[in-house]
Each structure stands twice: as structure tokens, then as C-alpha cells.
Amino acid sequence: MSLKRMVLVVAVLWCALITLLHLKLNLRVQFFGSKLAAETTQKFRVGFLPVTCHLTCPVTDFINKQMAGDGFFEPIRFNGWPELKEAYLSGYMPATFLLAPLAMALREQGVPVKIVYLGHRDGTAMMVHKDSQIYRIEDLKGKTVAVPNRYSNQRLLIFKALKERGMSIKDINMVEMPPPDMPVALRSRAVDAVTSGEPFMGQTELDGYGRVLYLTKDVWPNFISCVLVVSDDAIKNRRADVQRLVDGIAQSGKWLDQTMDHRMEASEFVAKNYYSQDPRLLRFVLSKPPDRVKYTNLAPLKKDFEEIQALAIEAGIMQGTVHFEDYVDTSFVKDDNAIQPYAWEGTKPTNQ
Image (cartoon, rainbow, N blue to C red; front, side, top):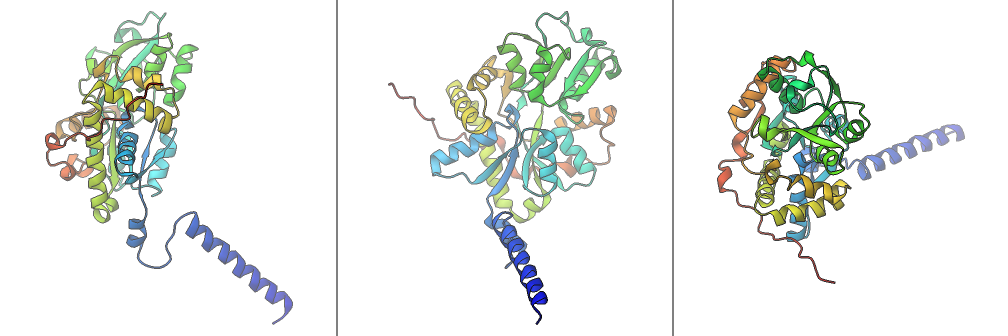
């Protein structure tokens, strides 16, 4: 073999080795055994954003680490909806929290996704500048309102609220904006009103320049913002992991709603270890008022999703070609009332 050919062979083999090592070490690709065997050796990944809609995800992880020494799934934090959605669609994680209308629309578009539980109920507000002349929903006419996403339930809530007052979505100027950017936009008066999941709405109130126009509990009681979704493959091949995840999320929600002390405890460990936020934000939105956000009664109900779908069709973001049974799997919650909160009382503060 000539020296030139030998060098070429060695270069090819070296590149192949580097590629295999990258696939094995960084992407966790298994080269021996079935794909299913490889998947079951990986910790179950769950995507979330640093919002109260997804609070039960880090709470479940933290409590299990305290009680058992390790979490049974891997929470993956994202900072915005586009990257979270793309990561889920790429198959990077089998489960994630998503906007309810977005999950429904994805199923309609052929994405094999199923809703298995809710993130919370209520937990959303519309904020206006404290010095504005906006005191009623009717006063939004001609104003610029920021929403998180075209497929957000906050957008549908505005659609519903305007319709009930004889108005149209065309009566306002609606813009899409990442929730973390909303407080600055309101403070600078770049927009007239903002609405998204907490704690970003509470931040405007806590910092003194925002005023509540409405809390969703007063406009659309038991409002649903986000849902926990899993892939069809996960339901088929990792059902035990999905069941454990749903049970844990449900237990965390009931633990949060059990006492205000639990909410304040969660505000500290979630803000510091998962959200990278000032704990005062979560303390504020989880207590002012206490029913601003609720984490019980989170089993997906047909009547709730049929109401969302009807609004989504009217708003033009769904076609109505799928039904509740197509995008929801209720088999993981046989009796939501039978689920008990985690038996964990938190870390007790020590006196210095």
C-alpha cells in the first residue's frame, strides 16, 4: 500500500472513531442492542420554562431528591417557547409542558403527542401601566397588547373576553412577545398591556409600575394555560415512566396547595435551583392572593378542552379535525381525588 493511500485510510478511520465517540459520549447513542433498550437506560427528560405553569416539574424533582437522594427524571429548562417546542419535536425529550392550544394544534397537524395532565389552573393576569387610563376590558380598544404566542390560551382568553363585550380581536393591536420581555415593555410603555403566565405579571406589580386589569380566575374561572404532554412512543414504550411522572406532578400540586408554608418553601428552592429568579417573585404570585394560581384538580376534563377547541377554531388556529380523545390520554389519572400530596415538610430553617 502506498504511503498516500495509507495516510488516507488512517484519516478515514480516525474520523470514524471521533464520530463514534461523539455519538456515544455526547449524544448517548447505543450501538448494540435495540433502540428501546437504549431509551430505557436514559433518564426521562421533561422540558419546562421558568413559569408558575410549570412549577410542579421542579418541585417534583426537588422533593424526590430530598426524599430518595435522586430524581427519577431529568428536568430540562428552556427560556422560550420556540426552543422548547423544537427540542420536543426533535425527539430530544419524550415529555414537556406546552401551551394547551399548541398541544392540541400539534396533534391536529399530525404530531404524535398526547396531553396527560395539566400544569395548573388560573395563574395568569393582564397588566397595564399603573398610570394608564385602562380600567375595563373595553378600554383596551385601539391599544397594543402583548401575548406570549399565537397558540397561547392567553390569546384565546382575550378573544373570549372581547367577544363577551361585543368587541372583536380586531379592536386591539396584538403582538407576540416572550414573557420575560413583557415587564420591561410595559414599564417603558412600548405596549399598553401584557398578559402571560406568572411570575412575570406579578413582577410588574411588585416593582410598582404595573396594575392588574384582570386575573384569569375572575374572567375565565379555572383557566388552563399549560399542559403536560408526552409522545405516543413514550406512552407505548415507557408507560411506567409516564405514570410515575404524572403521579409525581399530581402529588407536587397537592403538596403546593396543602399549606402556604409549602408554597413559600417551594418559592425558595425553585427560584434558586431551577428558575434563577429572585424568590420574592414566586413568593408574591403564590400568595397575593392565594388563589391567584391553583395546583389541584388538574386531571384533563373533556368539557374544558372542548371549550378551548371551540375558541381555537373561531380564532383560526385550529380546524376542528381532531377531538378530545385524539389529543388527551386520561388513562394515567383514574381518580385524581385519590392522589395524596407528598409526605414531605420541607427543609426547616435554622436559627443562627
